[in-house]
Length: 454
Ligand code: ASP
Image (cartoon, rainbow, N blue to C red; front, top):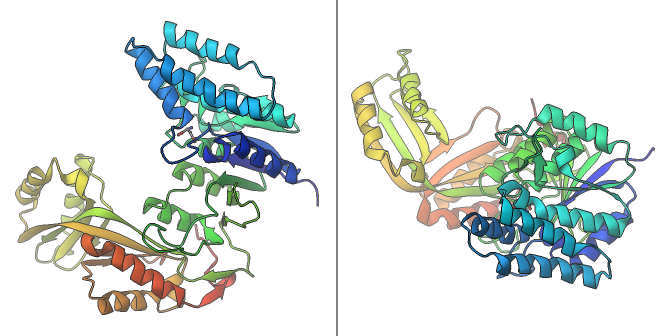
């Protein structure tokens, strides 16, 4: 087999100090296919530490307000200097910091300042490895409003990176046609990595972080939950939406469109397999039918009753129009013979609750309208889990056994998720109960549960 292309992205904790840099260098050298490396800026070394990006943003805010920023800038300089000293490197750090200082004093620019952490990290790592440094302002293309031009980005990355044997690319930022630097949202180096992987048609996109993959439940609620070795993009999207944050959701979207497998790996435990995310799982993998259980608190349930809402009079459509006109998103909507149930985030309702109820009363003249708050939403996620087994029945029975009230149930025909509303004060109990049940579920071959359908 010929050489593969592996794009490896290293997050902030993976590059937080010189010892982390060393681990990253070893990981890259360990596999010659890791040819295109994308980096974040150094993150926290310990809990009460600062991320370089936060320090840079503080410099920008102070500079913009005309206040001194040397305290924060000195911390940035010291963090990088410590790395350079420990790695015994000769690098023009003073010059780089002077350029940044000059720009902050004369014309502070948010995107430029915020991205300097990634810029310096990529330059330093490129030098350590003997790889070419690539400034993403050449190839990650934004418009003047800071929106990504994906088509142009893909073309430009291809043209600039493919001729290079090895490269280190700074994550998080890019530039518009006038050369102004823009950044993605926070955590956006994941998106850079994904775009590079897509543009190069990589065989694999490795995302190196500080955990050995995605867990099957939130470790703050369940003690030592199992990591999930394989999952589909759809499963990952659900689990991320419901709170499991390992990878930026836009990064998953880009990779899934191109079917580039993503492997979440742990820089501190490089021999761990991590989590492999793909569209079709290999037929021989063993997989629990329930991939994970996750959830969100802070939900409200709105119940609107009217005799025969489903009679074709457009009652449901009118209801959804009211939400659309207010740009108010909902988590899900269930319609019955005489009622519509909507699950909406409580924080989105806080400013408009009374007003919204009044509008619904005036427009739809319902027989009854009720709003229940302090609910949580739990997602039991697994490709075809509930089709091939009685998992859904067992989950509901388990919650009943634990005396946990079930306020709503939703399972679409895609059978990817079973969504259950439970009272907020029983959220943790419900997660633990379902996790316990999951452990007793049969592990199956990938073939039965494998396909993510389009
Ligand atoms: N350094 C940026 C942040 O802290 C981007 C990233 O790490 O992906 O958000």
